[in-house]
Length: 317
Image (cartoon, rainbow, N blue to C red; front, side, top):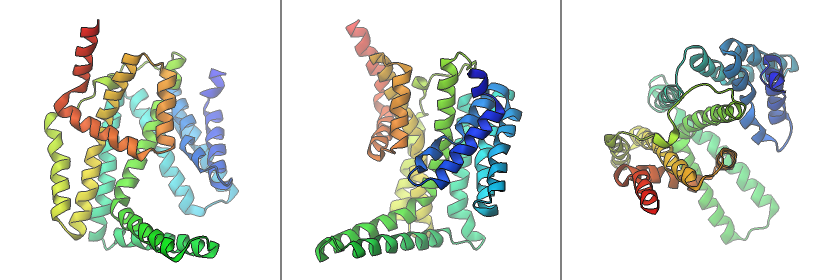
């Protein structure tokens, strides 16, 4: 079974089936979260060349099926390029998981800055296009509610106000959302691959445990400065500062995760239970929990929760 699971042909066919299910079966959009997983698995097992062979199969199936046109094929190709690059760097070049994540974070940050700061210089108004899409979505939602006629006039006004607020928020944080989604999407696939292969004894890389992750003390000034700029700025500067502040808070999400993982280890939770917990968090995108986790990482800068846990453990021991 292991030989079949990591075979490039099987991985490519499985990725293609997952892609077809995601885009053609109603209500199965969440399946798309697992499209790159088979390609990551075969790449980590056999190298970047095997990952490339596996990635060609869904592209060819999509091309011959005539679905989505050239734009969708280009999008899928760029999307499947990440497993090839990551597995080539980690397995073939010997890069550590931490180094790959740092490079991925910087790339996502570059995409974010390009969307907000550089595209307007080239005459592309990204914010305006997002606003137009959001307005279209708002009109669709409001028309749907009006046709159902289940809300009173007062309730409809309240819903309209809420949707307007959502649209304004969407326009401001869309670049951050795109960068963060791209980063976390592939991070989840990498970690799932790592856990699956480790359970079979096939993950040979020796990386630093996540429980030891800690940002430099002075990093805290970067999101704080961006947040102040967002509060004081206006227009394009405000939009850039808001997205940068949120993006610079992402590493604190990892620091908060490190604190939580240390607590899980203290409770002696199994690896399978921890994996199920994190899959649940990201699949259902529990925003409030993720915000609290990032704040935990931020306050860990001053309170060092892991040291305090160790002190309590030593006293109890």
